[in-house]
Length: 463
Image (cartoon, rainbow, N blue to C red; front, side, top):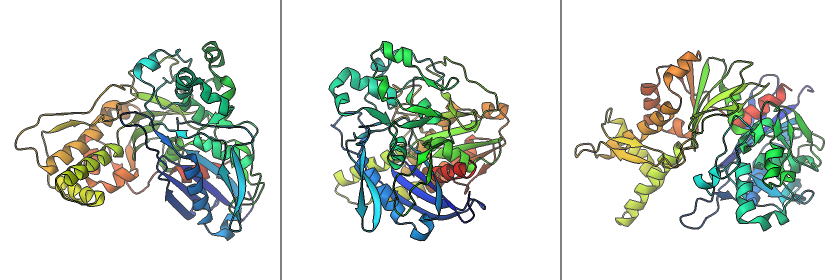
């Protein structure tokens, strides 16, 4: 890497896009920009469809880049890209975007592209998933996984495929457009998150899928995480044409890469969802046929290693739902206040409540290993119904749910010495922090926040 060059890291997240400029020698972030995408689309009432507007996401991505200093963008020599896993977007090869001038900069805009069906999508019911063939993989299939979504369209809207001839995650789409790829390339990390992918052979379950009429031509070609996918085919927001671009990575793996300094560190991240993870020793291989009820899964990491992951669908999104519910009640009672005001007040109320018998099971969004598990409330008493008690019980429930998935004794057996606490929901919520420290018998370190964009950039420095 040339002296004076800079590495760009991008993360296309569920609710925001982030871009960072990393100085490769020191590893310092010299510039950073984050924008909320607000790309969620309204679905029919009562449906579990979760989709996002790809045009909106790319517009915000372009805005993030143009907000960075032009003189530094001109020094970018490599680009690392990560993004939300499991989800899928469809497009037509060679027609997925067009490049336009925006002011005096060159940007790309989507064309012939579907909506992004996100990892939160719940259109694949338990019955539908059980009707699908068993994958030859150590990972089970779930709603929101790319291959499950393709199977759903195959059964319910087969004409959908006439519009498109390829597919990928949203971050794969970005890399394909930047490099003008004839066929999309996908890292082992993102492929594993779609289902029907064998991480040992690093191949799709082509024979199984073809037998069931699956359109295998949609599936991207595979590269190891960390490989270069191509070079930018145009100047982009001031970044020179011909800049190397890494194959798109999973946001989760990049987040862990940015923060876990030692093999004895576990990373607890609570943002929209929640994850607790640690790296398995070199040489570890997961079983090919896990139990569907197993709460811990193994995600491919880097250099053929795996992360043990308790990935809960219930994290900060549960607390947001709680605040939204209170706001709706206030409106119905004739009082108007902001969600942010409610948020601060319920946190403050809970800080004065150290103990509560009130118990909340917070699985409002189910869990992948238990999709039909619903939220519940128990042990209610007339003396424990204050706002502080309810908020404390909810925060405790979120952490206890994660602890039930990956308990302390299992962390100890794996040699874990401390927990790195991170994520927006955890950073903003002092009660959640208290519950983490109460439930997990390890030192908890904050302030070394996970950052997928930084992780994506760091990996490109080391290639």
